[in-house]
View 1 (cartoon, rainbow, N blue to C red):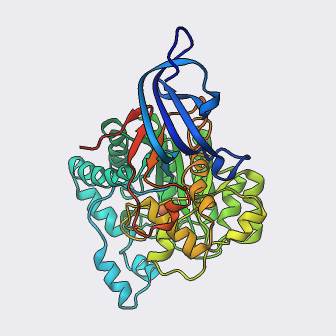
View 2 (view 1 turned 135 degrees about the vertical axis):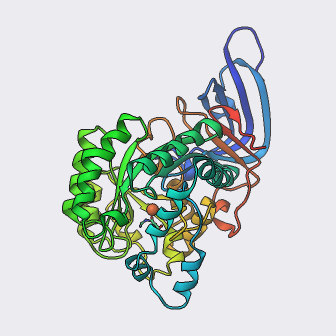
Length: 413
Ligand code: NIG
Ligand code: FE
């Protein structure tokens, strides 16, 4: 296209598409009609209408036939590396035992910890890679992965190493999060404070030293850790120079969102029981609300997160799969989009922002990811739809025509 002497040189040009850039402020979805994307190396160098494209030459050109393009999808909250499943607990719950009671009786997170500790690195990698491939096939180009099913230094390190390896061997960008404070492991039974000592004095510093940690998370709730314990984990993260996130107010109104905001957390996640004071605090600290419809649905929660309060206080909302064996056994981010709209009445545009721009903010990578803009990583998805709203509409997810990450076509076979 636009051949001629001189001018720009691009690695690839993508023409004849409707681009939902998801850039803030402008048209709904940041939509550009009859758009062209120009890519050099792994970045966008032109994003705009065909008419505005400067003269230049491309090594490859792709005519997209009017298809819709979105940013690469970002799943900003997963527990992807674990062994086994919890189908037995699903059955127990259907026979009337609650998630909380299963957890108190030594099941729940602890049962996955037992299996994860027993699994080899190769088993953990194979299981997690299979899940990651399904997310990538749906258009995910950035994936956050938490530890939290190891709960000792060795197994937390192994799960985070597996996460890093996924980023080297699969076409996806991985962000790791240390969730040592997920629950109290059995060897510290009744000694939660001692386990927190172990986390802050030993586990976190060592995991950071091994470069396995991009962020630090905790579970602050009536069946998790209390405020004082969570504060200690956050203080350690700060000392180690890592941002924090928090599983907050999932099963009870615990004031956890306020605590997250007080520590300028990147995100507070779940939030079904957050108070208005918590929402206001999140607004002041710029903490993203990560909405997890899968866990809400699978645990048959009845109190939805207060979407209207987030809107009113202008708290950014992200949406994630929360892929884990206990509360959200799902590897479909687009299903979460549909659920966020049907269960929580989010709009399709809010939902798509939640797995692109706002998900990037929840990971602290908004300067380089989350929207289709010049200078950002050339991560995008070509969809067989005309309108981006259609991505939220289908209950069984649409599959992309192409997924491009860092300027290159993603191939999974
Ligand atoms: O995000 N809330 C705590 N953690 C996970 C569930 C963990 C599990 O049940 O294995 C969550 O829902
Ligand atoms: Fe989670």
